[in-house]
Amino acid sequence: MQKILWVLWPSFVVAGIAEGIFFTVIDPQELYLFGQPVHFSKIATYSVGFFGFWAVCAASSLMTWFLQLSASDLNKNMHTPHHSGGSVQQ
Image 1: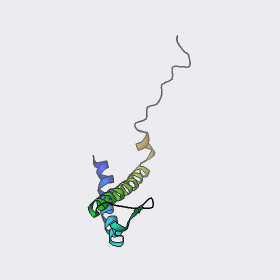
Image 2: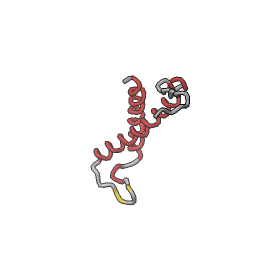
Image 3: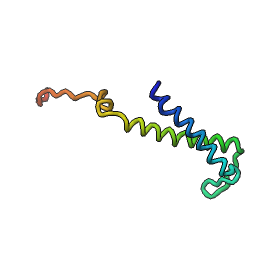
């Protein structure tokens, strides 16, 4: 549970900051998606934007956490295959 919080909490905070900065500069009613204007309410646009920023920030935090793992941490759950000496019994 602690590792999940290491990823989600910082990404939540940064997503909130990113959304605040983005929607301070960009009006949600002037957004276009695939060349068509977005016809969502401002609240819906803010919500979708926040969850989009949160997903990107969570992916970044997850990658950072993954790259900080040592080889022993990554390999501790790996099982070594047992060989039976090369003979096959039928």
